[in-house]
Length: 285
Image 1: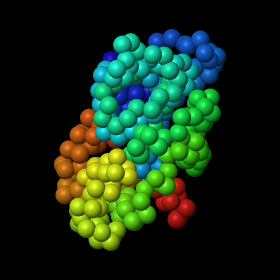
Image 2: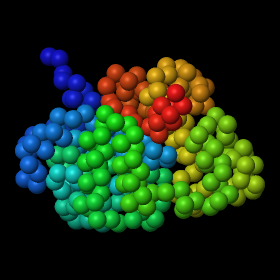
Image 3: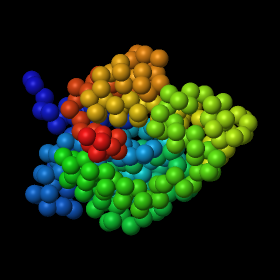
């Protein structure tokens, strides 16, 4: 039996984040039937803005797992249940900050937003859920308008306090360059030279000020750069080489390690990807 495009896209998103898929079975009481149907029938959207990634779409029934970066979960149409270390039972929440590499289990019904960032979880702002959910809703509604989706994504990140201001000025230089062109900062020694400090000090400062190692930053920057190129129509091999991978197979392996999904599967899914580079490319034409 042929699957509906929405089901294919949602299952692809599930695979990206290594999470089991659960279909939305019934309308939550918290929203109108019309709005629920609009959101449930809309394709999921993945927004890449700077170092952050935002997903808005159908919810997942999550098994216990860890993720490599800090994540925020925002309920859109119904609260979710979250169990963290030390909790005897799951608690019902509409907003949560999940520290990197923390074992947790999240179960939800309906539409949810996830925000992923390399910032330390202690520096994320605990915000009013209503404002955050409203902005996530606007991102979903703007799936066909990249400029609008990025505008709402930037507002949501600012509300959460997700910025680059937490970074030490010296390490911001190589990290920003690596984000724009990861192939130009291939090693920690190259980054240290740009920062004007010894390599070991550079490694320590990155870990202390961002919560991630240099290798994690570079791998994330390379994958994001390649995905941005794919979103602009580049082929798999070209996107991989331009981002600093030795081959398309190297890129595929990195994506599988981070998201549990091969890039070719992602490309076939029909997933709507919005990136800041997409806007830059439009402006340049």
